[in-house]
Image 1 (spheres, one colour):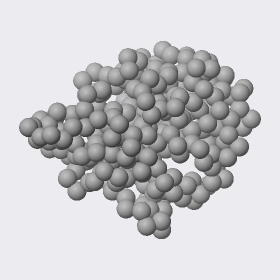
Image 2 (cartoon, rainbow, N blue to C red; image 1 turned 90 degrees about the vertical axis):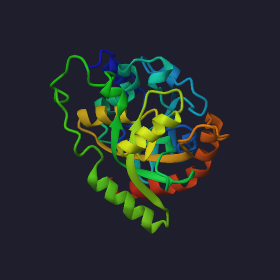
Image 3 (cartoon, one colour; image 1 turned 120 degrees about the horizontal axis):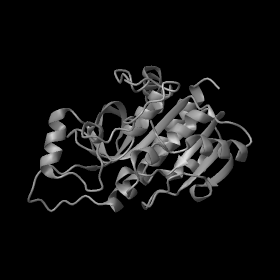
Image 4 (tube, rainbow, N blue to C red; image 1 turned 135 degrees about the vertical axis):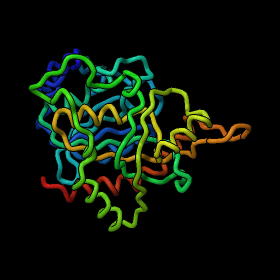
Length: 278
């Protein structure tokens, strides 16, 4: 169980906003522009929020945007902190714990990811069906340590991690909006290095379709605290799986392709929000 005082952080935010949102949205690299669509926004820069981890990565704005989107009361996390930035796992997942403490019932997460599936192309959107938590397998899981049974079980089942009804709704919206929606397994790594060709081949052999450096630990904590979770990967690059190639993955490419995906992802998220109960 986390030792970071997330209750204190939630109390600060509760006093700073006019209404308590019901849906949390986490935006990944290059996707922060989605927050610009929030109506009647209240902005809380991360540096003003007690205990809140601040992102040091280009492409993560570093603020909360609270307001209305498609008739839903939302809290948008415009940029996230990552394990590779030197935070411990308790700090990385604090925003999700705060959301649950505020009373948020559903969280929608986005990330920029590399495409492991050879059928994927940069610019695709992938609906996450399941995940591989590699950091957790080697001792960096977000639920390690003492457990608070009042907020979640000691041993959490992950057989239905990504909400079935929300995934079906996302498929319906994508079809109505004529948006090609891939579906697959996301593998979360620690980073910050991109995968070596041998690692890429290994992950694909394990059944992963996309790979990134976030999301998995956040979803685990969301499920531990009873939140419904929906998540999308923006495929920003092909993962290189052969040595002696001139192709090099870089963060600038991730950000540029992420911007191209934003309009379609915005339509998809708006459609999902508009059809969820208010």
